[in-house]
Amino acid sequence: MTTPIRFGGLASGIDTDTIIKQLMQAERVPVDKLEQKKQTTEWKRDAYREINRSLMTLRNSAVDLIFSRNFYAKTSSSSDESRVSVVAGPSSGNAALEIQSVEKLATSASHIVELRDKNNNLVTRDTAVKDLNLDASTKTQTITGTPTEVTLSTKLNDSGKIFINNVEVDPSNYTYDSATGKVNFSTPLADGDELKFESGYKVEYINKSGGTPSELTVSAEAKFSDVLTQLGSKNTNFSTFFDDASGKLALTQRNTGSDSTIAFTGAAATFFQASVTDDIKGEDAVFNVNGIELTRSTNTVTIDNMTITLKSEFKAVDNPAPVTLSASTDTQKIFDNIKGFVDKYNETIDLMNKKTREERFRSFAPLTQAQRDELSEDEIKKWEEKAMSGMLRGDTILRGTMDTLRSKWSGATSTTNDLDMSRLFQIGLSTGSDFTNGGKIELNEEKLKAAIEKDPEQVYKLFTDENTGLLPQIRDTAKNSRETITRIAGADGAGAPTYSMGREMTQMDTRIKRLNDLLIDKENAYYRRFAAMETAMNQANSQAASLQQFLGGGM
Image 1 (tube, rainbow, N blue to C red):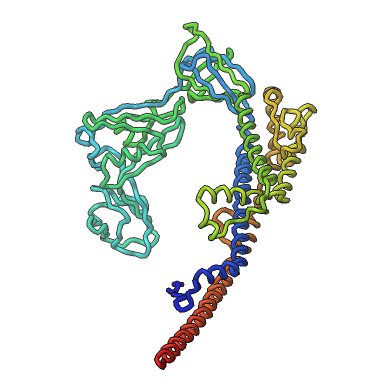
Image 2 (tube, rainbow, N blue to C red):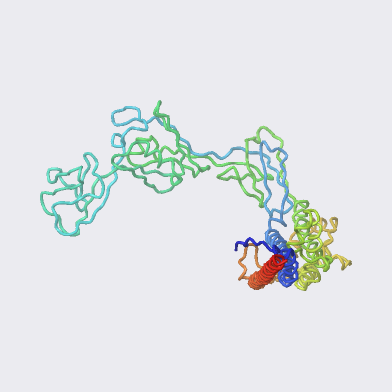
């Protein structure tokens, strides 16, 4: 609303604007108190949301730690990484192996061939497939009715053959229009006849020893580059390299071992010079572990849950130094994982402790706009630090959450024959005797590391058992507390109608607007009264002047 321009006190000499402003300050008190209440509610909501964010971080930390890899971390080593490397798995135990020799590394089947077309010319990527010595691919259609004209689903090869019920049709008994794909037969076909025709070309390959042929097909208009694309796809397990200048193709099996095969059947066997009888295949790895000779199809093998990679050959006949592999519990990593969670937990407890114990300065109410106008930015900042303090002092929700979290640490347990490791405090994690710390966890590094070394599985159970373990209980407590706070203070960015404090502030906004409208009416009423007074005084002054002039004129 535009504020009207007013000129008061012209007749009376009274500063009406100042008087009305002072009157309105008194009238604004209920509005100021309501706006201060709303500001206090907003601060309290924001304090709740800060707690909720911390609880979300704690919950996520519990969920992340619950995975077994965090409690079964292993460290591994090889006496010669250049010959054999090792990675210990979570369940590898504390083991040691000796690789005494690597007689052979596993290899893939590989084949290099110079490719030539039907005219004995070197093949290039642009060579038409129809000019290669490959078998034709056949398509099948079932005849409906008794037609003499049939439209083929795909293009017939040049000089392609047509079969009816597996009997070749003499070319003199039909005509083919390559533009339309239509075949006209000299005699009608019968309903249900099986029509086969040569369309496109096929390559039959075998990629596993003793395996059955698989087939790839290309269209009648395809080029050799189309064959290369399909031959090097993931379905074939072949990788390809082709050199246009020499016409040479290098084929390599992606898998290693004696089952790794490169073979073709039919015309493709001659074209690629690789038939089943050529026996193009890879070799298995042969190596000696702790005096036992082993054969594997790959150079990466798993023994006792240790992943071993053979990198180079060193034969027993050369009397090489053996490679020693070892795996052991990575105590430091497991400790760091647990400590990281404890730190996150203590941060959350610290925050809740601070909020529930923060002093409340009730004499420092939120500043009104008039008060802000009279203060500097630094003064406003210092005032609001006091005014915002203690929004959650003694809050029952936070205190209840802290009490519940504390009880989960003392109550977590797991069934074990070792009674010295059935509770968290026995492995170096306790809430301590100081109840003023709100349930922060005290970590005894020496005791926890000793427990990890002694029985990492029991440590894992104490933390993760779904019924009595710590982490599921912390996760659920944080989740439940977040839900309670969210109903009151809402999630970040939540709409006001979705949480109780938001609905309360919406009601305050409605009341503030109504009161402000009343203040405007009140202010206008004051101005009307003063205006009426000015009008009356103007009239009185005018009458006095007329009277004075009259009296003066009669003398």
